[in-house]
Image 1 (cartoon, rainbow, N blue to C red):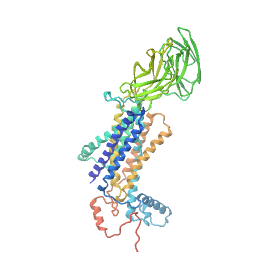
Image 2 (image 1 turned 60 degrees about the vertical axis):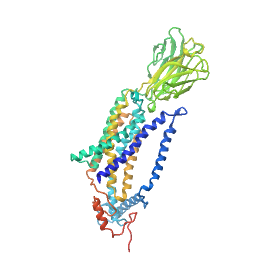
Image 3 (image 1 turned 180 degrees about the vertical axis):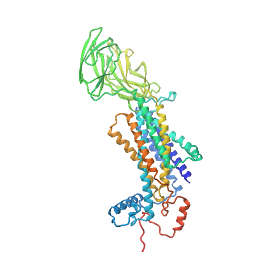
Image 4 (image 1 turned 30 degrees about the vertical axis):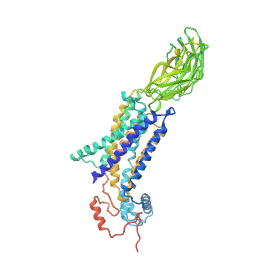
Amino acid sequence: MERERRTFFSVFYFMINLGSMLSTIISPILRADVHCIGKSCYPLAFGVPALLMFVAILIFFAGRKQYKMVPLSGNVIGQVCKCIWHAIAKKCTRNKTEKKKNHWLDHAEDKYEPEFIDNVKRVMRVLWLFLPLPVFWALFDQQGSRWTLQAEQMDGHVGSWGRIKPDQLQVLNPILILVLIPIFEHIVYPFLEYCKIPARPLQKMVVGMMFGGLAFVIAGFVQIKLDTYKESHLSSVESGVTFINTVDCPISISSSIYSKILQPNQISELIRFKENNISISGKCETTGYRTTFNASYKDGHSYQLVLMTTKQGIFKIKKFEDMRSKPKAGRASISIINNLAVPLDNNYIQLIRTDDKDQHLRFNITQFNTTDFNPVEPGSYTISIPGTTSSRYFLPEEYTLGTGAVYTLLLYTSNNIRDYNPSQVKELLHTSVDVNQVSMFYMIPQYIVITIGEVLFSVTGLSFAYNEAPQSMKSVVQAGWLTTTAVGNLIVVFVAEISLIPSQTAEFFLFAALMGLDIILFAIMTCFYTYSGPLTPYSSPDASSDTDTLVNNEIKEDIPLQDTNGIKNKYS
């Protein structure tokens, strides 16, 4: 009976994760690769699952005659709570001369049947054991939050197969579930039984929690590797600038923060400083043209200072906002600076994907100005600008925009150009933030480890909660089991909101340490737990077999049945 019950919950969990696998693969594709009016198609990504859910409801409704419908009667959870409250109240107000009860819930026996009180005792024993469990869910559910953010810092390219999006990496969990459940059911558990190695439910749950903590230790070391490639953020009192020379001659720059000669098309490194106002002098080494630029800077912000010449040949410096943080969702980000000597008559510049001409990004930009940083899917792109007629002109360069990188594309012409000629437009691509260097494959071990932990902990826990619950209170215990998941999510929200730990690496190790302490507590609690089989309303708490249940029912058939609310029937 125990093996069949365990198999049922394994199949149940298997089907849940089959649906999870399909949704995790398909939804990001619908969101990112299908375009609605030139943008990511979130309506389709949400609409398709909603439609499938509607179809599932119809199928479920069509098969209603195949189920045994048990009419609802009473509020079991409400009656359990009332029984507990009544027992506490009676215990607090009892007469000191009154005989001491064996259990504090026995104080409710003046209002509730002994069998009902025994069932509540059993429920309380199980729910007490559930108290440490939310910590496991606090770790497990970070696959859709912290681990996805970790994947955004990594490279998802898989060669000719394309690119894995960060939110698609979660599909590893349901895929591994579908593989591991049959392995555990048909190989691991039978092998343990053959070797006579004890593998009772609570023992398996403890081992599952150990795997969950180990997964976060692995995630912490992966984050350490990621941090080695990460540019340190500007502090709250720092600003940063990058000089970009688009002029045909070397420019000598003099300021309190940077003094150097920049060659044509040269870009400086990021200069960090703590001044709010800076005066910058620039001098063309061949013509002697000079300019002075004064600007204010906000702390914590970075800027690009572009050295340019106007149509009239005037040398100047112009400041644009820069972006020094990784784009979200594993994308690239790009901004275009229009430094063309001739206006484009309000025509637009277009970024077109080479392998899919329908995917393009349009930039409306005026002369000597810049666009915002726009997220784009990583890949190869070409630039389209207005031609001399109504046609579009494709610039010869093809750019590969990598995952997690930030780019600024400058379009400019030589100083002596006075008439618009698209073939003489020059391009300069500046990378503010480098592409992700670490492959997402580094995250596979932590997914394997936490999924093993899930099979041992979650599937076993579902079966344990059902098996240990009294016959009439299985919904109460299952509700308690699901509540542990909700509380685990609240723990993650709390830790994330208080933001006491700025380092993601330290946060991973903190959760692993918290899991370690939780494992010790739970293991100690399990040492004092005594397993019991399913109870009917008239079974004793020690009943553990279907045969005993049947005998008890036959012996007590002449006894008036307990009412549905567990309250004593009154007889004259």
